[in-house]
Image 1 (cartoon, one colour):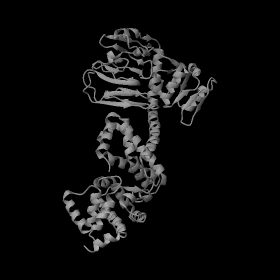
Image 2: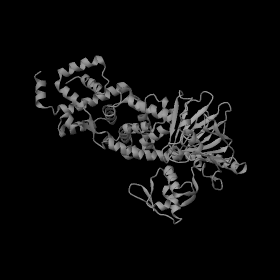
Image 3: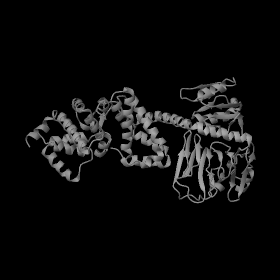
Image 4: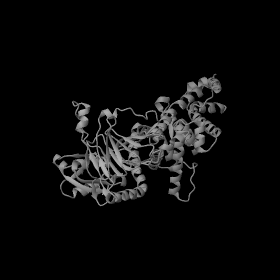
Length: 195
Length: 356
């Protein structure tokens, strides 16, 4: 889904040579998922784009220190998370902000109907099933399914254990499975019954 | 009711986290539960985002908006630093009028010099690049400070090793070189090389300009026109040396003749007004020029603001202007020039500015 090695290479080129082309590529590659991640926290795609832009400005300004970053992808997500929470804190003043209250609209997704050969009704049912999950579970599902993060990367980003990521994903997949099985084509159900 | 184990394994498969020994177990479970195979297919497919799908086109547009923000951030970043360096430049300029310590020179050396082997080839090199409309500041490993003007490129080693400190420049930069008598500092350009021990000077060698300029503010420098023939010009305070780079186009003359044609001309720095020197004003974030034809002013502004300015009326190119711009944006600067009543400008839908 995502080329971790490519991201590392871009990071190296930016850090060592001030390579603007690698910088642009890195932005193009990651802006979509980082903006969505930030939008889930802040509840605004507009604000999220500014936050991610600020993160990348910081990357350019501190490019000489990038060599010290161990995992560029997680680093970018962590920077985006921190800036998003800080921004939210400033907007809401005294309210406590955390990753527990998320705007899950930004996270919503569903299988591609054509590719999966499913009806619009099933696609909708799957989307609804995902939406019925706790916000944090939805976020974990997206970070793995759409953004291609590893278990330990999600764990690091959300300050939870890899075991929790594993357990939360099991819940999400089970939920999707239930939504699909309710609509199982009769021949499949048939073969299941007579096995 | 199926055991949750199959969903755990399916989730791990989806995430590429399935261990080799788990593969078999998943296969076994999938054979027992054919409906789960279908669920696996759905899980492995790429899914669609319901809100604001973000394709390559959206990414390009976001990148464009981001680059605008980056550029203004880079300029803003330099402003907190500007006061100290501004004071420095003003102090230097004071010395300039009092002690007479500034000069500008411009030269050109052909491919012969440029082809000379680089002694630092094996060192790890770094590069600082500025886009049009943005400037940058950097401290080199030896403590030497460099301001890099818009649309420029500076090559420097990660560490200065050996008996020389060498950097390569394309475009314009202002150097404050830390003194080290044992290791001369050398700025190489396509036009010439500048050799110094410890001093403050400016080098301007944009490939698109027909004159290469270097300005010394304090101390002394040697300008190396031809390393092999030891053609070196020593510049003293308040001198300016200019040489056209156009001879490069004369392909029929031999290298020797070409060098002979390129006679450097010494003159003084351009003081636009009290304590503003055109050649070094950019370090203070000022755009300054004196009695300059509009054609050249426009080229300066394009570089400075990262704009696209064109002439509808070619006759206007010869108009002459003197000005110092500080905080003004492009439009304000153009409006100030327009106030002379000698030309008009307008911006079209593409952002191109037309002068008529």
